[in-house]
Length: 46
Image (cartoon, rainbow, N blue to C red; front, side, top):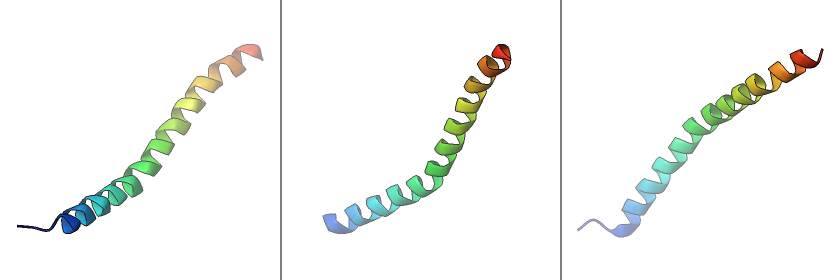
């Protein structure tokens, strides 16, 4: 039997790695979509 604590530690470390990798990507996508959505109205007003 594998102790539950080691499994939890493995899962938590995997989650941390996922957040480290996915966080910047999600931020980049959010900034890109915000910029794409924000540009056309500004150009239309000018």
